[in-house]
Length: 534
Image (tube, rainbow, N blue to C red; front, top):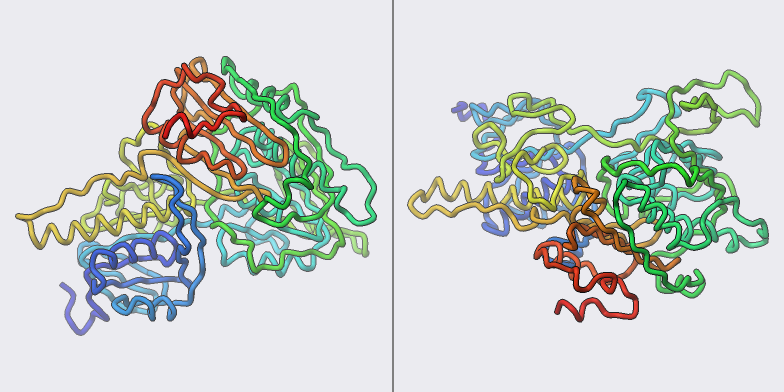
């Protein structure tokens, strides 16, 4: 035990990190005991809090992430000691957390919620900006305001939102995949976004009569069928033809206002096979772009999509002149892109190097068991920094997303509190069961103004392609629904638009009902599928 005069404070629970996982952990402990002795250490002057939480189904929640000053959080939670500082050491044998300012805090249980850092390509270059957390968004907005042309690298959620939200700048979007947003959705859904939001926006430009330079199938369902069937050999695809709605008819029903910009696109050869959807995107929170002015110097926006391209090097342009770009980026095909700014949105690495005594792998993070405990006694971990090292449910897997950070933080808080209580009252111990949220993967977000719900094995992750059947329904400008079935039991779903079907399909995934008798009627637009499964 550290001498009394050397310790700044003693707490029952300590949480390292003021992100959504750390704050959720603190709030869950307070749910059990509003007067609990808790220390929260945040390296940022703000914490991230989930507000306006709406439960959409058993495992799916929609919420807004707000940043609150440390003082504001402290004023709401009087029993919590909030420290703005950076952790220098965690000494688990002494149960001590030491900050770089020299403060020493003693704990009984500690949870590491240190998050992850962006994998910025070409770090240290003046004209390269990494975007992954809200702290980097302010810098991005400042740099965008002076830019005419940007090279965007990455194909996850942040990159997708960037393309939709930024205005007044030309964007060259270089992706290594064969379809946009490949970390989240299949090529059919990617085509839905292009057809619904990109290919016909030009008509909204005042005085702009030029037709969009984009090559897509005229029939969204026809294209979806082709894309889905080429995503894996032996996968049966059924495409349900629906009415193509004019964007003006449906725009008033969309939750986000439509952006107006011009689009030019280079689409991949339709004869090529689609890449497997086995990579995952990053976890910047919902609505990260709200209240941020992401506007460049141009009047309009032009987007050029370069498929199967990666940036292999950048250099400063030695030439001078008004028409010269300050940075030149070389792609893997030998082409060179001139631009004002390179935006890197290419994933993250867990911040676990400081905690080497915990079992871990660099790319996976700190290993935790099914109670969020690490390999070190009384040390827990949650959120992006950790890797759930237990046997996963068939329909759940890890993606570094705000939704999972919140789920893990809540569960870690519950586990820590019950463990502490069990130590105090061993004769009346409470068993800690794995939370139900880990039974089925679920995530809700927004891409191009559309609500997007991902359930279960939404891209058929790990399933036998020979046993798969895909049911797809697509209505341009309104919705895209894909069901992944194996032996006619629902394994996953992608729901784009306000379908209202997330709870129904989640139940079908969890219950594994044989759906062979319903067949294609599962997505028949003339039948209310919810009536089948009340």
